Image (cartoon, rainbow, N blue to C red; front, top):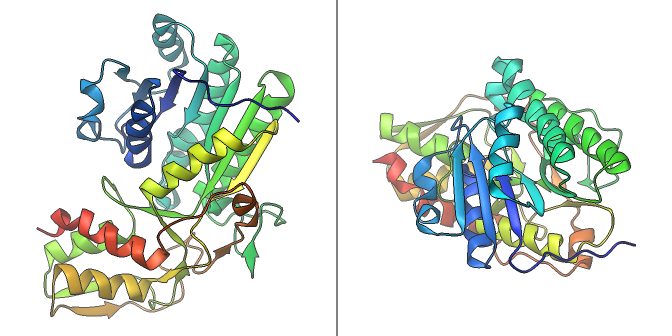
Length: 324
């Protein structure tokens, strides 16, 4: 057993730090007293997400594609010693990766591959990685960390699974410790896509009707981004193996697309009708239903405060501006 706790005043490099989840992570790590360095190519990230962080003297940001290995290495050499990397950069828009497989190859897999090459070059020993439920593919019953076989049904899931494989291989050769987080559906302020984002944008275009892909019975766990960040930091602080890998989700709760659609209409456009396109899946590569086992996370001492439904209601309020 290897025990390494997050150092006080550590220097942490975050890829994709201007993104939805990455920017919330930046804010929380700064609030905890760390020095944070970040890069983002703005494929999905936004500079305004870092408005508060950019005023903090312990934060350094560079607009940079981490696939540009030479530029990334040079940038980090300017910053001095880096204690660990949180690799958040990826394409998280699954339909975009279905329409163009190069999207996930470049933004999801190669960003991981090149981040690992950068870490080897600079001798950075610890990696924290944002993975996904999409690695599991379609399974009946609760998804456990040892569920298999793993046959992803989206390019996004395939590239996240391939990334996990490269990371565990790197752990055998040069990394000292790794944490892998398999996310559920994450929602909240600063979102750039996803079901709530899409519904609110559709209602802005047509306040009289909300089109919903599928039949509304799709059902998944949802977690608010602030709770996700809290869970990640808890696992990072208390996961003490060389390889730590965890499902993250709320406790035994899920929300249907029908629930989300009705909540969005009720809040953003009362009186609008809802039209379902039919079928059990919203798009190619969509896993219509899944549930997580989080026994491993619970045993580590973390529980969510919000149910999936409560997280949905909060996220709608935080993104209402999208419907105006």
